[in-house]
Image (cartoon, rainbow, N blue to C red):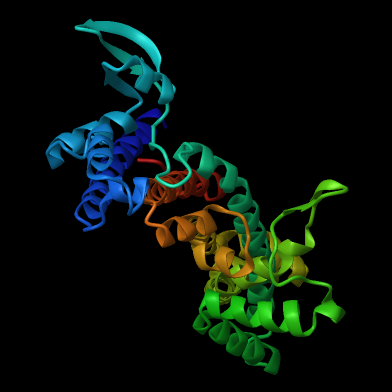
Length: 351
């Protein structure tokens, strides 16, 4: 177990290094000047040059790359104590010439626009994204598995055909298009009937009552985000259940006179869940990292909306931090999936 986790962690570090490198060079070859974006178009040349020096933009690209890796590393070397304090570093040992080794979380820099820490911005927005992604995935998993089981049990009937057609339609409809339709019809045209809003976050603010929980604002974005994974999970569950129901151990269970419900839920379903779990965990990672347009359409305060707003304002540190956060989520979920396999299916062993 320990060796397996160590090896997977090593792979994760390599993948993250590749993502960090790609993100850094991608955003540092863009023609936009961060110093001018930060100071404004009417700032004098001397102020622009001072800002470029402050941001290390006057140094060669490879030096800036090494500085960036140093900021992201949990163990970093700094000479500037004020900068180390800003990065949240705890002194481990002095290295001479005023340099010290610091222990810290990855430092993502500051927003060009708000001057707030990128970590603080993403941390504030992350709970909204987590709530939205888990709600959409819960909806997709429960209804997707249930519909897949029903379709497999009613194979060849009208109900099976109806579920299959609905699944194909759900797979074909992009999430952002489903979001636009739901926002327009259920949030705008039929607002008086549904009571749902076109936009809004988990928490709403009232000048008299203060901050209040608005769960109803979660309904439309969760449905829009969960449509495609629901359709895919339903199809996978149906296909996997049909394969499992044709196996010999199912025939043996039926021959023993076990009730059909027990045969399906206790014997067939657990053995049919492996591809479904792969889809669920993969989609969960994608929803956590990629609900940008849904959040933007519904005005949902999350990492996606913060990232889209940052792109609109050329706020590169926020966008880079968001990309790295997304990559981290994929890696963690992938590792958790591998561990979950061995728990649910004893046939899967950790090499």
